Image (tube, rainbow over all chains, first blue to last red; front, side):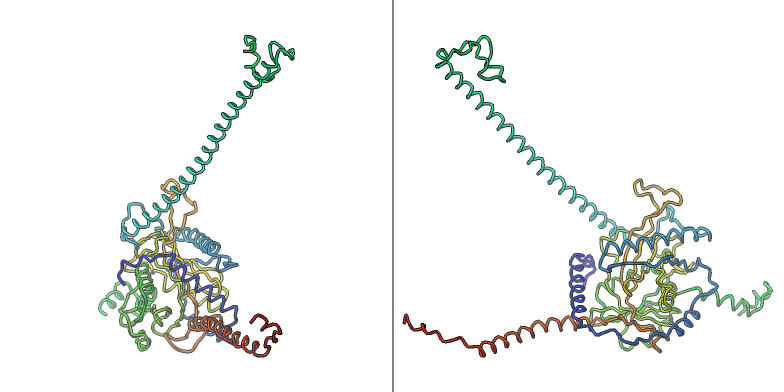
Length: 216
Length: 288
């Protein structure tokens, strides 16, 4: 396999793992896996003796730099990635806080100064690829947001337009109706002893009750 | 020997004392020999390269033949003056077993490595100095059981970069976390970022740093702990360990069970049909 292929499609890998895990869980539930041993070997005294033998007594802490967390980690569901990774993160963070104090007390430099340039574990080209991916991801999200907003605006704009058109039509219709009513009244107006000013044709419309109009 | 004598003369020390001092200093130096067996996949090979980049006190060796070479590994370690060995054994071009052993006579552990994600994956955005020392963070669960205490000691001595190792850098750039979840050891590698998140400038003193994952990440499932290096009597056997072969066999058994059930159902149906024939219809020939 050429080295150019080490950027595997992560989603593909995750799918394989998920499939595997699902099948494993199903097999476990079906009770098909061999049962755990009844009496596994566990020689505690031998282990403790060996531990005493290989532990580096008398070695200063600064040579080892190991921190043990005060409380054991508790993860309720192993499959819950977020919770699990959060616990690991917390554990690491607490350890760093403690270690920083101890290391600085031992007089060893902890923080890397800004002008210290040396070979890094990931090459600059690789970091550029990571940055590119982050940028394109962010741009993708932004574009999706823009498109959604435009769609909403268009819908809203369309609604406003329709309402306006409808309003205009209604007004037109109302005006025509009024004219029709006035004409009818005129034809039968003298018989009915209608009010000369014809104020009550349209009580809320100011146009019909202009004093100059005498029924034309 | 001449220098010994001279130092003894000038510093008024006993020769024995000087030898003891030299021994103590050299016992601090941990050197790890990294070897892989033949038949590693590309992902496992990249994992090994990543670990080699992170551990400046490690020396990588060429591939060895799987079955024969386990006894030879101790000799290889002695040749290269390494007191720890990391041996990655690949089986069936699929499963990766990791042996960590103290070379001359010390204990050895065999793990099954699962869920491997190498540093190449673009979701892990952190970076650190090549060969910088790291903080090792262990879960409190490690202090609960004797076998976990031993594992903790072995992991510290193997993964921890000794002070003043030849290719190491002076600052503390990253932190390894080892946690015990579900009976397995989960490994994560984070970069310590001490810059302010928004401004990018230096943080206030005693403010909390942020951690960004660098990778690689993997899960170690302990199988056995042996008293000797690559052999010897077993001190601990993990009762919850199921070999990947057994898991695959169980999955296949499940699939074959489906087919077997179907065949059985068809046979049952046929027998049923034979046993209960349809009653004769008196009006069958009416429209012929």
